Image (cartoon, rainbow, N blue to C red; front, side, top):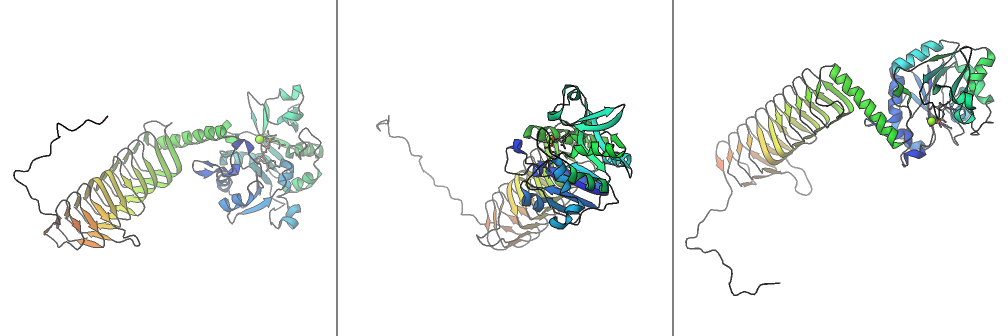
Length: 466
Ligand code: UD1
Ligand code: MG
């Protein structure tokens, strides 16, 4: 199978400097979604016709299975596909096109097309037919119309070239088609541009096929949104919701409890065990794994992380590049930054930030702490307000807290420093040297009380300021 993806269009209505096909849907460029769908059907050679924002598009999505064909200027969909043809090989320097296999044409701004629909279209085309993906719409405005005579497809007429009778046709061209490659290479150079838009229309190949006696067949998408294109931010938002609703549906199908399927965003891969519940407004990015019985509270953002079974993530947590062990309690309002590894039954409470640190089983940091570049053992208690001073302005330095240590509240651990096994640090300690095991270490100005001391009082004769 040869695949051509048209992605040279400008996308003026996006009103953006970013090329249209790079706008993200579910965190991935529109064109990336189309590439996923064609890779799913096993396409080996994919040619992307690019133009606007050229190099940016190439850099963002280049891969060994893609050849790139520059279309400059953009003279229409027929001209675009021509750039990908073997006849263009010599001056494009690309190696696209096996004439014996058919060619599938797709649009880079139609992101939700699905593999089963493409397979059906390819099957309909067989080896010697032209197959069009068409749809019946209540409002066909703007689309090319499928003109049939006695049930057989005769040609496609663009909206701007259509007469009233043709405009009344409700079967439209989605733009996705499969054609025999050799025929396509023969037809494309012969296309003219004497039409309302002065463009080389790919759709004119239908009449050419009919004239040659080649069968023209049609297939239809399972869902109308599969062939919807994106030209504006409003359409982008609409398809984002469709896509998210589909993901929510799959999650629920797999047994995940969602408080509201309309209020979840998955921008990557979310892998769920059994009996997971996810409250509203959670965002999942990259690859997130939730083991059995995990509960995620409202308004959490989880990116590239693994959460162990039975762990509860309370509302408003932000977790990135982290591993959380089983039976933990995280949050509300906890931030686990990259390099965090938590063992079993670890509690990280509100306004606790953990970075590049490991915290072993049954340890707790329940309130207001910063733990950076630290190795923390088991059954450690980190008091409220504890800070690892891990940065001297030039280097990041490590703090080690051994098993069963107790860190009093409002303690600063000036790294590099080690707190021995079973050690206790008195509240308010600024630890600059290692604390020996099993002892109380405290650095604190001696407490004094001054008998007879009087609070200052206001002078009753002082002039009031106005
Ligand atoms: C096209 C079809 C129309 C169909 C509609 C479906 C033609 C002549 N018309 O119309 O029958 O109903 O799509 O949405 O094919 N592109 C390029 N280079 C170009 C022109 C376009 O790469 O020179 C790309 C665009 O980026 C876009 C796709 O081709 O992804 C379709 O182009 P667009 O201008 O939207 O075509 P329509 O006029 O909507
Ligand atoms: Mg269009």
